[in-house]
Image (tube, rainbow, N blue to C red; front, side, top):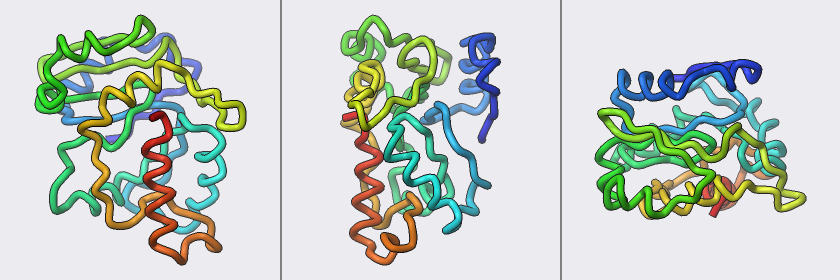
Length: 187
């Protein structure tokens, strides 16, 4: 499910709302940040224009969930795809990381946890950020959350899920490499 919240409302949306959405959906995993949206499941070559933005702004969220579900149809859909400003982990993923106390012990002061009956919402910093690859400007809170989920993050891709410009899209190895580079952008 995709939920659009305008940037001007981000500060007024309560964490209780995110927790409630995650609880109602019985979220297994998820991520939320500033991003570009395409029609889920209908990604096409026109989406390749996102690529330069994804490389420039590491925290820019890329939905591509249709491609993710295709890649995980034989297993892995229960594992997180990525982290971002908000990272949702269901109870099974919390347990894979050693439990809530282990998660609490591994985070910094600028990372906030909001629990719900089915898991936890992890917030990296007070507000979402884009970061800037040119200046190395990836917020430390984003790196902290990425390191946290890295042991359980799904990386079993056979093909890339990020649409590349046509001159790069002919080579499956390049496509896969760019996808993995994006998934590991906060590591």
